[in-house]
Amino acid sequence: MGFFKRLKEDMDVVFDQDPAARTYFEVCLTYSGLHAIWMHRIAHFFFKRRLFFIARAISQFSRFLTGIEIHPGAKIGRRFFIDHGMGVVIGETCEIGDDVTVFQGVTLGGTGKEKGKRHPTIKNNAMIATGAKVLGNIIIGESSKVGGGSVVLKDVPDHSTVVGVPGRVVVQNGEKVRKNLDHHKLPDPVADRCDLLQKEIDMLREEIAKLKEVNDHANNHL
Image (cartoon, rainbow, N blue to C red):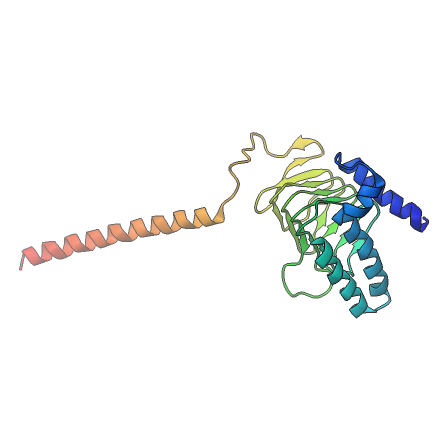
């Protein structure tokens, strides 16, 4: 595909995804997600030729301008759309397919200092909603959706919807995986731990009360 046709394709995606877009002139000059993708292509060009410093310098300049951090080593397919985009982070070994959409605050990151492939693979037509964190060398399946604020640490099958912390599949192939899902009753490990500590405190209080009773009884017989 020619250079200018590729640019037009990128802008056409904005019109498809964002009803606020009005003209090509406006989209070209004011959409930071579009600017970040264009600058990433330049940075990735240098990265593939092992000109790492130039690649990183371009990506950091892009981050300064757009608020979107894409490592120059990341592989991104066609018609990638970043909506608003502030706070989006995409790691070095991340692989993104075609027609993928991400929203502001999304992190496609790693889980530690491991080497090799350590960032997610996002397949075609996937959507990652606002504030979601997809971490580690995992796969988000084709046409799958990750709910806002979710933290995904395991593979997600094709055509699935994931919500929660940690993320869990609630819809797969158009069918609910779990009936009567209450979205307000998401797992809360902090609350669970506090409940466990409270039970242990109550048990200790009972033991202390019993020991005090035995000690008072012994003193009364002296």
